[in-house]
Amino acid sequence: MHDTARRGLVRLIGGVAGVAGIVFLVLLILRSCRSDEERLRETVDDARDALVEHRADDFLAFFAEDVTYRHKQARKDLERDLARWNEFKLLRITIQEAAIDVTGREASIRLRCDAGDIFRTYQTVAVELHAEKREGAWLVTSFDWK
Image 1 (tube, helix red, strand yellow):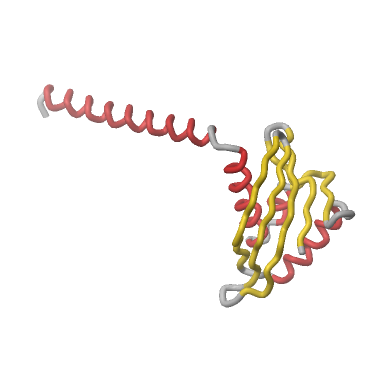
Image 2 (cartoon, rainbow, N blue to C red):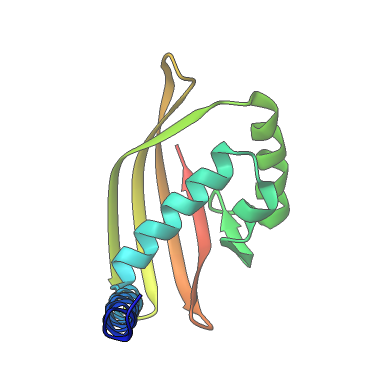
């Protein structure tokens, strides 16, 4: 390969690497500029995934230690019900509707979810969550479902 061709190839590779670096930087900036509503929507999806995949520790990580569960119960009651849930091995929870309202460092989240297996829905559940932004992360402080 001639020096001219080699230099051209090096410039091309350098240019592609530069463009890739710029694209990565732009994506990183866009990801960090997401609104609280977008971050909460992603958090809800991640929590749903953890619940369906029976990853109890990952699911519980979304909840504050002082969470109020079902209006008057505590985290230990949530953990007990989660252990019962894991026995059922339902394969699917589909979020049909989600409403997220953020006011400063607090948010309310209302969901309508279908729970079932791959063939049918067994139950539609209304979920209401309240969350607080603590140390830069959203944690559920109140959790109820019907």
